[in-house]
Amino acid sequence: MSLNLKQPVAFVPTMGALHAGHLSLIEIAKSYCDEVVVSIFVNPLQFENSDDLAKYPRSLTSDIELAEKSGATFVWAPTFEEIYPTKPEIISSGAIGNLFEGVHRFGHFDGMLTVVKRLFEEVKPKYAIFGEKDFQQLFLVKKMVADLAIPVKIIAAPIIRESSGLAMSSRNTRLSEIDKVKATVISKALFSAAKKEPTEKARAELLKVLSSESDFILDYAEIIDEATFEVANEESLNTRAIVAGWLSGIRLLDNMPMRSAL
Ligand code: PAF
Image (tube, rainbow, N blue to C red; front, side, top):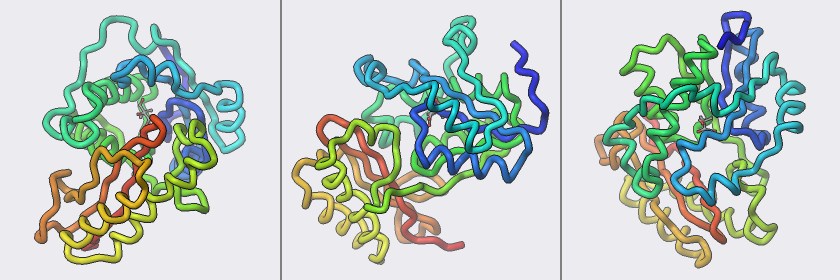
């Protein structure tokens, strides 16, 4: 397959259901290259549960319009066969892929890395923009690019929040108005923990605030070392709180820097 793109390309891979968070990635991409490619592909390999895959929001026509309005010069919505013409070689996300999100979503990161590598092979971007919202994904993509010496620079883009503090996500469209209010417990916990030192106090604050919303079913809340993705300690230079859980059966993720040495 040849996409006939004007290199160099800045690339924003997505699974569609575009929201302001994605549009901010497209904006960032524009500042790197004239040719901005947005892919829209709901990758079955990264869904551990067929129900979640079936319920994933799909809005291709409005996505294409939104992406183009925001500055995408090429919107690519490949078919499954274009991405996986033969049985793909699954990329292992290794030990870090089995932590946190990986514990709860078996095979998710292997499937995600497999599609990202395939997308990079077709688009051959100079830059690829990934949101910090999926911080473990961002970490693993950077690691894969380094391990496999893929010639692309990964650019990290900050989380975009609703005015309520809720981190923007395609899954938010499935939250009721009441649940959107309840979900703000996550960002409240993160903002509150960010004011606490040392790490132990920040961790305790995170758990305290999260437990104030009984409908939020916590999967994990931890403070990790950004360099290793392992649980942070007092020697860790840059730390980040990561949270995931469920509200009315919808999975929500968020994170925030805690201590920054830089
Ligand atoms: O973050 C996402 O939307 C997806 O995981 C990605 C990077 C597009 C791969 O399918």
